[in-house]
Image (tube, rainbow, N blue to C red; front, side, top):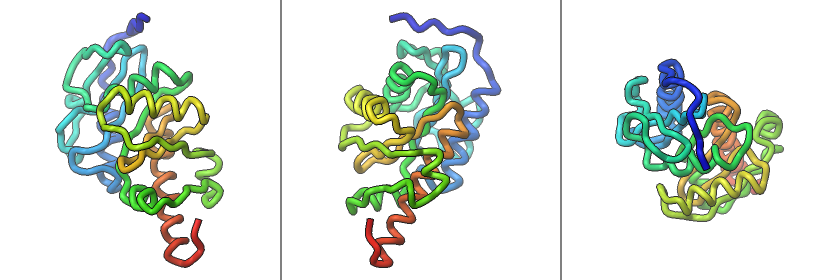
Amino acid sequence: MLYPPRGPIDKSVMADVAEALKTLYERGLVQAMGGNVSTLHNGLVYLSPTRVFRGRLSWMDVAVMRLDGSVVRGRPSSEWRMHIAIYRRLDGIAAVVHAHPPALLGADSMGLRLNPSLLMEAEATVGCVAGVPRVKPGTWELAEAVATALEASGCKAAVLRNHGVVAVGRSLWEALDMAEAVEDLARISLYQRLGGGGV
């Protein structure tokens, strides 16, 4: 299948990608060189780079790819396959955020189920959270597993076992909001467990 781009590279979109990943880092949701974000704009995928400190990202660091997986510029994240697979499979999605939130990873390791009804904002925005078993990062196997989980469930977020969260949306900021809502749910679930409530 052909995926022709429909416009030139947009520097303002590159700046938004850099800003979104810097925000994730500042909020403690990714490590210094971890996590990745992307947005689909005019047939091109604007994707955060590999091995660049997230706290000082600039628009010039952002990679650009085509939906066929070819690179237009830069050095895209090692998880580029996952972003491409999601855009190919899910209609109406224009942004993907992948983070490694610590509370979520802790809750996941304890087997706690995330219940969006615990947080009204999460219930209204995320709705549900899909699950993906442990799969090697950066592989097509993981990419297809995540895309399939989101497509089959209709959820806007998925927890990747021992790995993190993937959230999708119609914009970078919507996807970022989804990822933060999932981390908030994880914190609430942990507080419930500490308080003896359990979930």
